[in-house]
Image 1 (cartoon, rainbow, N blue to C red):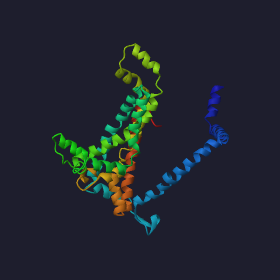
Image 2: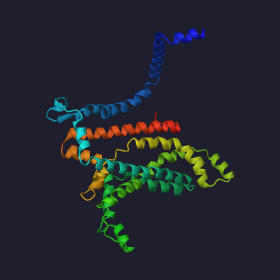
Image 3: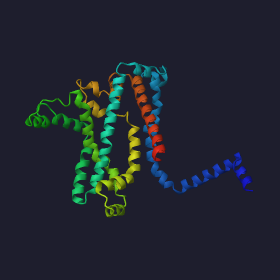
Image 4: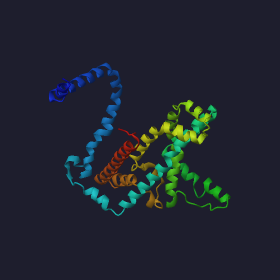
Length: 324
């Protein structure tokens, strides 16, 4: 009898009935919770207008786009612009600059918020803890333009306090930090760490508040010191959060924002500061080569998508933690 039932369940009609029942159950739940779906409506509309509708315009990466003729009136050129980008003499330099800056930023900027969250979580004095949190969070609210302006003032060769301090200590006081190529990556990455470290630590601090304090008390009784308790209690507790955020960061490793790089860029450091995003900005808006710029941007996003899929797959195999 059981065998007959199982065989009937595998028939097309039985599968269709199962799908119908599942669909009816879903519709019933949607009618019951229609208010919750109403709250989702603005988000759905936002993503539909600003994220999905622009996908239509991606086809200009495969056309010789002219604003006067429109998208459909422009001639189809296939992979012409992709080949032109790959064959340009600056391709490998731009790709290398993008990868080096992104990986440097990931290696330095990702673990430091975790360390800061662990330190803040260990502060017992609430006033000192709130003061430390405020001091570390505030730089995040400084705009990119103001931040680069502060860096230009602080590291100026004429009146910057950094060069003045170096000169007082007996070093050379005329170092052009904002102009020399060898300083650009360090200036970019470490200023970003200073600006974002406190804000990025919030999610780890929230995860640490959920750690059962009885585990720490039991570890103290067993003679575990602070480092051992961090390694064996705190870090395992926030490991899923760390892995999820790492996957998301790896998925945008090619997406170095052009604003800060463009503001810090000049003719003296352009050999290391020219990344894909700034190159797309110059090609697209300054030279008005819209199809060429779209092709480069599409290439950049495809690489990010492949990296996201690969890192997520590796994470699911190694740790059973993944985005999907």
